[in-house]
Length: 350
Image (cartoon, rainbow, N blue to C red; front, side, top):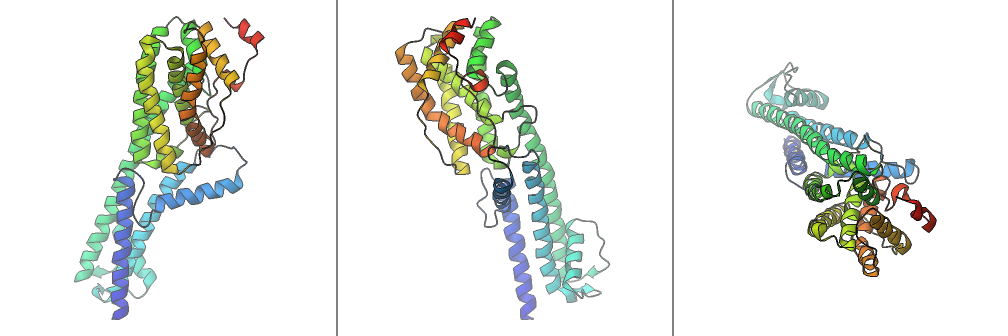
């Protein structure tokens, strides 16, 4: 009798903790604060395994995030089956015929949980409510799984559409200098205002979705070599360059974009608990950035602009680079092709 009571209570606790973890992970925004934290533990275990199997600097496999997501829902369902199996085993006498073994109890619980009704036993008394609860929980978790997958696909689609727009105009990985030169060569510098506005909207959408559902951080953008951190870096570099050259018409929107993008990088790096390095800025490269922007028709290089650009990049660049390293994706170069140019090469640019 005591064993049956302990089994039943243990089953209730396991089901409760599992459902709480599912609810906190799927429904409640942010990282799960439940005791199990199954999804977070799977991510940690997966990253630990990748760290010891992939070569340094290699990107996280495209299948990593989808695998962890599916494995999490599978794990939750298995825990629910085991929890309800404990309850069925404790109430084995309430089934006709009686449930003889624990494995049979797990089968009865699983049959009720996935609502297929394959069990050949009939529940009586309190066992009927256990079967009903199992069916309700199984249906709820499977419904949340489908809904969550659709939400993930929608969020990834919105994020990647912004990435494609930036990489199409500025290369892959994207570069703020290449973006400025591209718009200047096409005679549509006025469109940069919309780039800044939509870039800020993109940062806000990514922050809302990725902070609410950290799974999304690890979903790769399959259409580009660079990941979303490179696009974020290119947008922040674009805003910082515009601030440094002091374009009056664009300065306000550039500040808003930089603040929103920096907030995005800071929040996600805190969520991932990343270590941030703070290297000294390469002022020669920064000077080349300002000179190339001036050649494209954006302001005139001035000493205060160089100091301003170095100061602004120091606020966000280390954090964004830490995100890139964590995901194994290439960082966004300040100059196209991630190389500094000599003075002679700069003189040959249009």
